[in-house]
Length: 43
Length: 567
Image 1 (cartoon, chains in turn green, orange):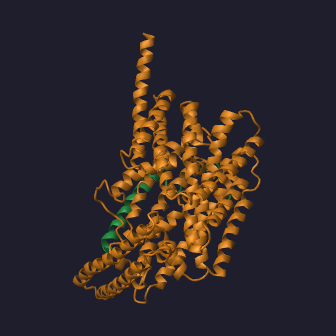
Image 2 (cartoon, chains in turn green, orange):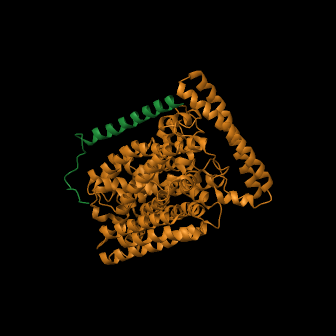
Image 3 (cartoon, chains in turn orange, yellow):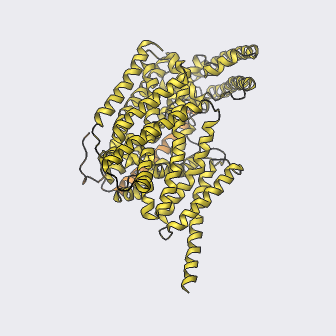
């Protein structure tokens, strides 16, 4: 397990941490939607 | 368990411990021992944080919950991603910038020594007692399943954890947790595949979920707002958010995990990835429980899953009544099986009216089985008022030991040990950090050498380890200790979160105001708890809000007094 360089402080795939936070919030909304569809479909 | 299972279990435990000790050798100073020289990458932080939160009970309770009441428990974690965002914006950069070892160290820099000492002391009491239960709870379940004395399972779990945590410190904790989580994921995945494989030939994965769904077990989402229901979207988002924020932001067992990150970015990424992965992981664990539920629609489940309690009842004078209930249960199962087969056929035909009809018939048949189980539980309580009538934790393990192939049973039992060891190791490390950094180094021996502090950290881990093992052994003598410890946690968590929220967001409030607010709040919370004014879970919210409000009030009074003196 190599230690990463201290300068590498940007998140992967996106340009800033704020974008990553939005990505996570969007993921939560997506999961709630998927689970809702799952509940509706199988019940 | 067969020799193969024992072999797999022992081999897995040895590999984990050896790997952790090998990778963490050579900690020469307190920074290396308590924070791994702050050098770990994000994936290590992520897995460590997950392993700390996921105790053995998580992997035992969740499938059991899905079996008995469905998948609504997944909503409990909806607040976690939002809490991770707040942590990454506020807590993580501050803790990293100040290079603190413990969360409470920050409070001295923000307020004063007495506030730091008070919160550290409250944490030590709460975490010290609850870690004993973290060892005890899976020990008693494993002892039932493996049919060996609780003392041995407690000593094995406790002894192994203390050994590698004392030797390798936080690095040993993180490295073993990484491997533990990988094995846990693989084991659960294999268990999921095996459940589907064990279903009848004409019941595939999708149909198994459909059958469970028609019997009300795929209720993953509930948008209704209900104060009394802990598992709705709203209680998960709002209540879960505060709960996760207080746990990840103020509990040193979690703070210590993400402080090992090589930089603010690595700690942030570890926490955010935890936010991404946690909910799907919990959903999949619950899905295994749902599949086990469908499996038991075709194979008769025991009338009660905790064989220890059932055996006790069989040996009592209530045995004739129990035998009658077993016959009723058999009859209810046969009736249910007829309805399940009809539903299966209706699903094949895609006959919607027949499916709806079968759904109603199956729910009635399910209620009949549940009613027999409730009667068995009442009988158990009549026989022994202290009997443990909640068998949720035994459902999955009972299935594993009875139906899974040799080797996989050993692996899944190892998972329970590993999950317990992961959360216990983090707790011991955090107890040692707080004892040495916030008490010994700050109040008792300020100017000692690095070597002395390292030695003190190791001894502190040993002592806390022994205290927790003793607590776990003592827990078996007192029936309601688990609940007592949970109540104690609720007495303390809210106050600590309140102090941190004041520290971060109310910059004009000083140490004196927050300290007296915390003391007064703790007294009020204790009185409310003792008098049973509200259910004990609400004490968290009361404690947090009261500290914030009283801090503002006291700060206002102090300012007024100062102005009066100046005038």
